[in-house]
Amino acid sequence: MLELSGLLGSYTAIHADEETFARTVSEIRAGEWDGLNVTMPHKSLAASACDEVSMGARTSWSVNTLFMSDGRLTGESTDTTALASLLEQDRFDSSAPILVLGAGGGAAAVLAGIGQREIHVAARRSDAAEELANRFGTRMAAWGTPIVGAVVINSTPVGMAGETLPENVLAASSGLIDLAYGQVDTPAVSWTRFSGLPVVDGYEFLVRQAIDSFAIWTGVRIPFERLMQTLRKT
Picture 1: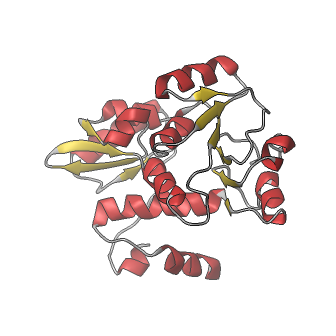
Picture 2: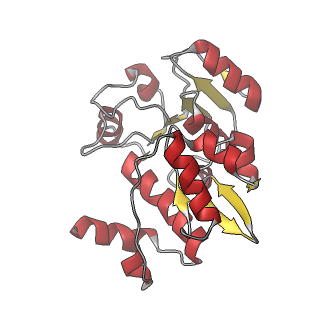
């Protein structure tokens, strides 16, 4: 994205435990970094480290983008903003119910971006699903229970190692947004594509949330299609 934007800079990966994370937060406060992305399992920790968080990040208590604003460490969840923009696209039925799979920070960030819909939450740990559903005022579904016509949003790691989501859940769906990603399509993405239903894979989602983060840090928004064309050539 730096190359496409014409800006000079670098993007560096840091493998961080909690101690490294705390040190890196001190460095961004000192101006040594212009911004930071945060991945699991530190998204809740990142929210706690901020002086200020966006409404979506406050709702989910999940932050993946850090930046300084008026001397204050500020947090945003571009998982939330990317999901919201995807659901606004014509490829998904705007009246369809939503089935969120998972009950962790990723699921919370997703729920914060959905808006006014019929929403169901399911997780392999029913207690965690119930807690999250109660927190967001949504319905709870048992893991593996199909919701007819729902857009399924998988916020679990299921699929990253070739595992499959419950087939009846996909068969009853009207589309899939899969946050799990890897070198190849997850089985759920492959099945949904083969069935001719609308699908967003984890790679597309990753790119879209990265575009939002980059725009926060630089003020420059890289068009999605232009970035994807560049990435396909590399």
